[in-house]
Length: 431
Image 1 (tube, one colour):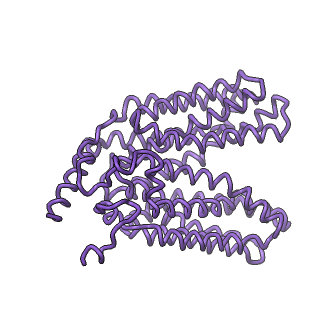
Image 2: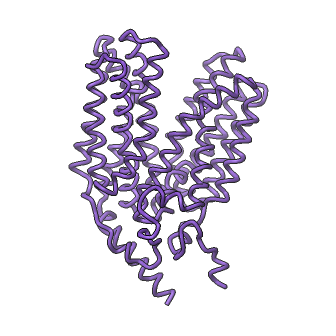
Image 3: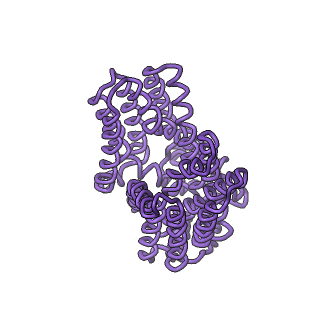
């Protein structure tokens, strides 16, 4: 009977994915769209400069950027919920179309509260597509290729992020030091992604087969929203670990340059280290993922978390060029080993009906950690100076311990008949 149930569940899951996994063109469109969107992500770089050009103080301009960032963090949660109602394609179209209109409208608003509100809405709308695109990308890809396709997803993000400042400055310069071409350029990029999504992505698919599968979690019993995600206690532990990890990871963009400048070291060594990280990730991550995609998630993710802590601890040595570059190379190695697995794990471990919520939750804590990390690191640096790095390394050690406890084998999670928060151990099942 158990064998028959397992076979039925496998057949049910296969029937859900059959529509999507025959769509390589849609996968390519998604990956291209992610790159295009990220390539146009220069608004955050120039928003403060634009607001100061309108006569607002640096503090008010920074608050505008904060409003945009807050909207972006909330946007991924809303995007994860909209996928259930609109489908991934329509959510992406709504997200990018809204972002295009709101971004362009910033040029024509001069009332400060209204500017803050529209900046927050632009950030919110611009990020709703992330859980939608990640959900559809996961559904379009066979299970054994999930880590690799998320490595390609990250490649598009990183490559676009590297080129975005150059594109933004080129538009600013081409517009004769005016922001009009820059903002309209970003709006055009968002609109291009919306059109690409509408033309190339598959329409929403129904999933009745999974609901009937006896080995899938009973989503009617556990709910459909984010409360259902919170009932998966091991995944919540994973989210906590990811939050701490991301907060520590963000220190290379905030606390490290502060420490370098305070030490009197030439800032060029910091820029070399940051460029080195970008080069390593873009050039080597896909190559390394060909090997690591078959590794257990606990190993690849655990190594990523642990190597970040080791690299951060290295920064705690007497600071100099060798320390900065060595520390960056250590945690960059962890990033290329485990980065794709960190992003793929929520999609693989999630019940089919909750995939967008799991991905939205992960992207929410990723954004939250990126926002909180610099504030926490800056406060610690004021209190401890160069001694901040051992404290941050301890944070990574805690995150590593948490993630080793949280990460489970996806096959076990997929076959568990109990609550996803209480996955039955293989030994207990054998007994």
